Amino acid sequence: MFEGVYTAIVTPFTPDGAVDDQTFCALLEAQIDGGVDGVVPVGTTGESPTLTFEEHHEVIERAIDVCKGRVQVIAGTGGNSTEEALELTRHAKDRGADGTLQVTPYYNKPSQQGLIRHFSAIADIGLPVVLYNIPGRTGIPIELDTISELAGHPNIVAVKEAAGSVDQVSLLVRTCDLTILSGDDMLTLPMMVVGAKGVISVASNIIPADVSKMVHAALGGDWETARNFHGRMHKLFCDLFLETNPVPVKTSLAMMGKVEEIFRLPLCEMTAANRAALETSLRDYGVLR
Image (tube, rainbow, N blue to C red; front, top):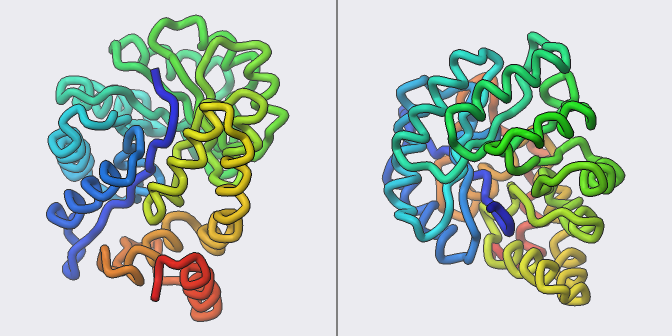
């Protein structure tokens, strides 16, 4: 159901700190023009922890309205409270989202049995679920046996794997009938070599066409072309994580004149040294003149 490039799209803000609807629409159109297969609004890259419930709903609705079936919308509707995740997911389903990205509940550190009950309750709503395994942010992994059990639910269809392990992807391919999407741009190609089907990408916010060309080359078996794109993009992939995501990618878009360089606390601007290094990388790549 989900393969290719899905952009974990940023949420732009106006100078007074409100969600910038007009700019968000322009960003979505640029993604569609760049050839991505879908967008993921209000994930980590969309600064979901600092959006209100109302803003969360509005951003997802806008993404669905703008995309109009031209590309898929996987709505970021996870949370560390099952009831909140259910409410957000029901709204996304009612508005016409194609799927939901469900991050592991964070901070409260549920058991694996708690995860099974959490994700199963959300999947019962009927919207296709992409599990999001990112223990570096949430504090706990979704263990392999847990994913295997959850794969038996008809509405759990994919995993965004962001634990930084290609071996984990190999194990998932061997044991689970789920689509696997990379959650790390720099590991997309290695993960696709062993069976992943694409990426939920940060870098495609700024270079959607090139990320799409790499992934679709790999999907088509043209590994030489895919390797060439990976080699060209690798330094930029790395420099987009000089500081906590989404600060570098949003800073990049601001340098490109596409968004205001505004974050919501506790996120803030990059250090001068890291900003300079990122700017050099962007200039070397050719997205800045």
